[in-house]
Structures are given as C-alpha cells and as structure tokens.
Length: 135
Image 1 (cartoon, rainbow, N blue to C red):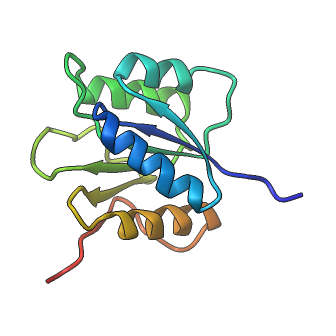
Image 2 (cartoon, helix red, strand yellow; image 1 turned 90 degrees about the horizontal axis):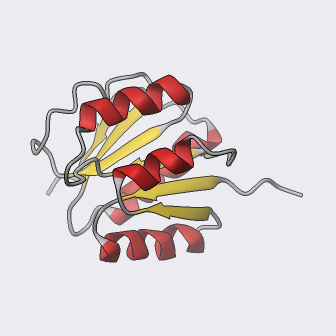
C-alpha cells in the first residue's frame, strides 16, 4: 500500500484554505488545515508526520521570522512552500535549503501543485526556489 503524503496548509483566509484543500485532496494528498499561527505550531509540534507545509506567513499578531525559527528548530527537514504575495513581509528566516517560494496570484495553483509534486517525489529542485509564470 502506497503512503499518502500529509500536507499542512496554513493560511488565514478560509477561502484559500478550502480551495487548496480541495485541489490538493483531488491530487491524492491528505490535507490538514491551520487558520492561524497557534494552530500551525500545535500541528507542527504534534505527533502527526507532516510531509510538506504550504504556508502564507501573513497571520495577524504573529512574527513570521519567529514562527520560521520555531518550525526550523522543531522539524528542520520539513519542506516549506511559501505561498504568499511577494514583498509583503521580511521572510529572511525562511531561507533554509528546503524552502520554496510560489507567488500567490489568480493562476498559481497549477504551479503550486507542480512544485509540491516535485518536492514530494524528490525531484531536483534547488531551494530557495521561486516559480512565477511569465506572461
């Protein structure tokens, strides 16, 4: 029996969380959701094996870099896909070798799915990595 990858989606917007859950579940992934930094860290610190984190670190009242340090300290091997708008936050602590960037926009879901698939199958992607469709 093939292992189903566990993906954690952390985004404050319930519409985006729901959309990503539908899209990634349809790809065969088991998807968990976190709506704030507290829920995110609770799941990261739990006994659940998370294979990949899709994160928009723009949570109200949360320091993104502090959150990054906590995630890296707890699970340094965890691949993180920063799915967020560019230039909105200082994300300098999200620079580990397993951090990937996909710019959030109206047409980015296919790119996000490609990046997630490549990471989970161990394809050669060099991080930090940024994917943005041109034109």
